[in-house]
Length: 428
Image 1: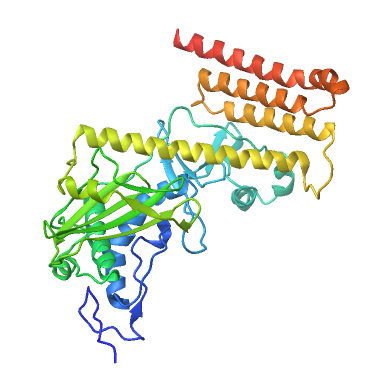
Image 2: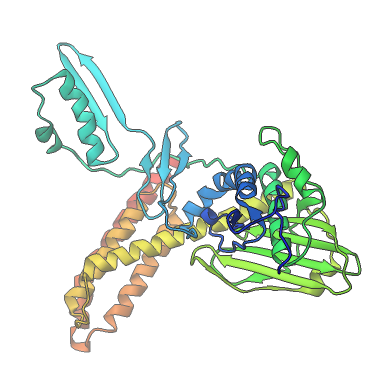
């Protein structure tokens, strides 16, 4: 007969009817590890409300920007951003940036009533036109829809994204994750964990004991993946302490320490590739981590913490841009070639492909954030790809094929020069 197990939050005995999966990292943020026999349904709900949901709300924007894979099938949550003029936009990975709200303006000009409508979808446009028809029954919605124009414009200036990533959210969640991960590996949760959870109040959160920013200069934990979450539990019998470490999105590292009574060292790890949506091995440089002080490396408000966080978020933005570009490339190939069905590619197929690539580059260049250097680099890549494809063409046709493609390159150069002249004038 197995020994009874008790919920680490409520202290109630866990039965088959009350057992639940304890998500160490929330599923919505890509976590896959969810052991049973640690939390009752009631205890799990308490941790969700106090720690997991605030973390999800804080980091869902990053999950969306990089196109992360959640543990369960669900619709992506749009990320809200604000432009310099105060207008709000929403972004979902793989989709166009769209205004957060539609625009419906009614203006009286003499004896006439003018309406201006900016809708995000054709369905929404019909709904807004319906408002006009209510006031003017003779108004023809179908006729108005014939004059609808689909337009894609970038906001003027950069967009601002608000994310709450301070210690008030990270530290309490890490403390709870430490308790679950330790129990999963047969160790005790941090002392006073239950009492901390009981008195924790989201409105006035108090920070857990012995929890700190832990981002030493020396890298001591590694995991392969484009963007990863990493967990480590290290026990040092010499010091008599456990260290739990959680690093989310390769960017935010927090540690927790508590007493460790054992003669043998331990090292337990977990990592997940957030983009691929799969668990990956993690390796720890045990001599390195046991040799360094297990104490705070930064404090909230430190300029170095701000700089490091900014740098790591910048890398995540680069990942997002690269993944979106790769997605656009795949779409361009599909438009150019359709379904291949193992058919042999002809010269016309390669021409269509390069036309699609050129159009894609022009589309990217409409983004005001694209600089002169970026345009020059993209032209160089286009020329290199064109030259590589020309070499695949039978020798007798290469010159003629190159002449067909030349106008595409010339057009990109003209657009680049025009934009460069405009930017120079604006700077002057």
